[in-house]
Length: 197
Image (cartoon, rainbow, N blue to C red; front, side, top):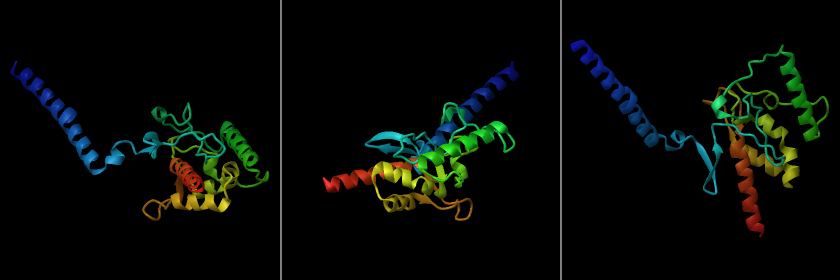
């Protein structure tokens, strides 16, 4: 009986310590030190959540920048983060990439042999990447400018404002968060409309 009491007491104490006290303390520290990050890095528009800066989402309207394709089903499903695991020798993967490239060339009025940034035709490892490369954003400029009736130079300036440098200054390439970029475009047009009105 003594051993059973000790075991039950140990289970109770470790459950209390590891299951309640430690998680509560870590949550409190995270919320105090990193309030925005600990709440999911939510981006709000007019006081309402528009999405997370850490999770990509599907932008389908032609006046918005489009992100990377998503390997999840349905697209950008945060509960099903996954890669396709298809490699460059997979016939289905190659057909998908070819189809995406053709569609992009058609949407943007690009030549049939023009190069397409790789991140516009391939999904990321998580299937939820919120960023695209600077090249992928610049590739879409003319379409977005045409749909929004804006100058290409204006759109490019907004992209540069939202560009993030390589991680730690040397790892990776310049990139742009698609949600923040599209939100920046909406804010810019809204402010311009207010000034002209």
